[in-house]
Each structure stands twice: as structure tokens, then as C-alpha cells.
Length: 331
Image 1 (cartoon, rainbow, N blue to C red):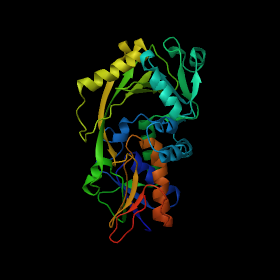
Image 2 (cartoon, rainbow, N blue to C red):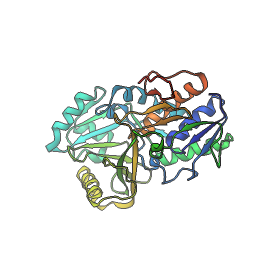
Image 3 (tube, rainbow, N blue to C red):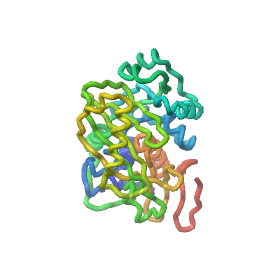
Image 4 (cartoon, rainbow, N blue to C red):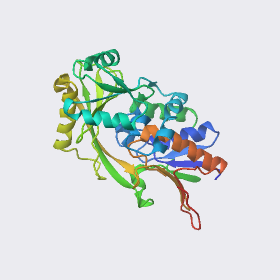
């Protein structure tokens, strides 16, 4: 493929692919009926955690390996991120969950109450033990999407009225018309303001039924997430899910009981059966999809792989499938 290229979809995957291609000198346009990034995009509601070691507790090694390059990629593209690590805690009755997490996350180190007080003073009173993963980072998804959009516009990338040239399909769940094995995994999340709590990094509260992550934004605003339901439904938040997120936040720190509820977000993450992404070559397009709950973590790697394939003809060793007529597949 030689271009010019049309990227279908202006979420985190589409914008990351466009950014990587433009950085390598390609001519790119974007086709997205919704226009600029906003709440219509699944990635608008993301937590923005660049936490490969935390995710590695429940996912495959390739996710960890590729995810470890994400923070540097985002920083190199001008995104603002915070490299403050991740704190992982559990309530007294769930200490076995914390021990299991520690076995599966070799990069994690144990903190006692004094250690917790050094990194998150507001939590030291409530937890005697925690795990700390020092090398992880987080960013604000909305600010990052807007930054990529503005940076691409400054380099002459426009939104076209119809696809033209070589097509790279990054539409997320909307691509089920050409990716029949793509499924939706529904997530519900809250945005709250709690002036009485300060956090410097994402905090994960382990729980066997409703684990919680809380990601700090600015001005004592926090993202609380996220449920994970096998459903492509993208509109309806349930009372049970919202109440479980609120109860988990209250269990983390009682001050969240007085938090101001700013937003309730709902969307469906695109996922393949093994919850790993794919770069799939079809007869009429290349599809970059299936980021699941790892949008900002794995979009940089998928973008680099896409650029390597379409500009240099180098098929990646992982996550690539050739579904063209007569093509051969390598996973």
C-alpha cells in the first residue's frame, strides 16, 4: 500500500494510526461521521492508565511487553502524562486478592502503612498494606484525544466526506460489519469531584466481585471505573453498576460518600475472543481493532505495526492476520 490513506474512525486507535503515519511522511485523511473527538467515542470514557504490569495480572504477556512502550510514545507525540506509578490496595477481608496480585505482578513492591503515607497520605489511615508499581503512568484521555486532533489538523490532516485512497479501518465496534468475530464489552464509569480527597496516581481497589480503579484528573476530579459486561449496548447505565462503583469508592475512602457526581459514562469496548488486538488485512482494507480495555495502552503499538505494514510491507510478528483471498494468517 502506498497511500494516500483514509483512516476510518477518529477515536484513540484512528488518531494514533494517523499520527504515526503522518510522522513518517504519509498523506492521511480521516473519515468519521461524528467529526472531532467527543463523548461518541469509546476512548472518551477511558481511564487513561498506562499500566502494563497491572494489566498483566489478567492478560497475555504480549500486552505487557507492548504496553511498556506506550508512555514514551505518548510523550513523544506531545501528550501530557504523569509518571507516578500505580497503587493497589484491598480491604481487610480481601487480603488474599492482594497476595495473588503480587504473585502475578513481579514489578510490584510491598508498602506498609508508612510507605503508603509517603505516596498517598489520604489512604494511609485506611490501609495497612499496599502494592506499588513504580514504572506506570496515566494521562487524561479527553485532553490527549483533543491534542492529537489539533496536532493532526496543524499538519494538514482533514476530515473527508467519503473514504478515498487506501483504507485503514479503525472504527472500533462499528466495524462488526467487516469483522464478524468482534464483540462488545460494556463498561460503565463515573466522574466525580471530591474536594476532601487528593490522589497523585491511579489507585486500584481489588475486590472479587467489583474491582475498582480511581484515576485522578485535575481539581479533585476523579474517574471511577469500570464495569465489564458482555454486551454491545452503549447507552444505558444500570443502578446496580453505578451503586457498586459508588460503594467501592466509599470503601476506598469515606469522603467519597460526599463526592459530587459529575458524569455517568457508558460505552462498549471492541474486543476479539481472546481480548487481544488485531491488525487484519482484508481485500479492500486493513483493520486495526480490538483494543478492548487497553485503548491508550496498546494504540501506540498497533499504530506502529500498522505503519510498518502499509509503508514498509513489514507484517508484525504478533496480532497480524491476512484474510485476503488466498492470504495466509499468522497470529
